[in-house]
Image (tube, rainbow, N blue to C red; front, side, top):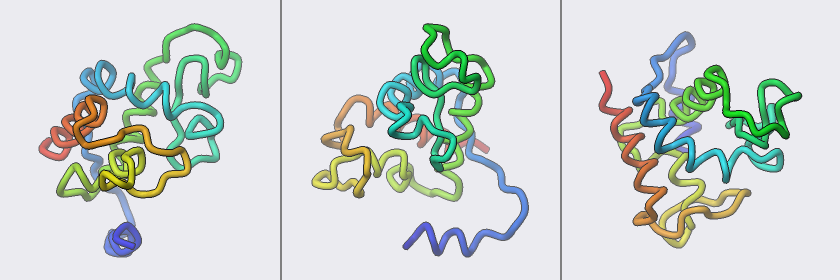
Length: 140
């Protein structure tokens, strides 16, 4: 409901994305997202709202799907922008769907068709993701 109200409050046009540090995204965040979220049955599908690319998973070039080649710069940028877009308009990192969806509902998360990936807010991967989101929200 909050997202629906937020969407109604946003005027049409362009918005600045809260882009965090790209290098830190590649080093800390992408290794958390890609193995768990970029499979074709999850967000590794162009029809999904939070489409992600991953090695051995969904790729911009379908011929690279099963290859052991690193993500290209444009694919990394795509993942970076997709995650950043989830954080648009947030004032607190904990409100990000990127944290709430994969967090166990018993620990404060919200239902997620893909299940819970973080059992608590003390999970190391949760903390890495939260720190990156917090930093991106502080960017001017």
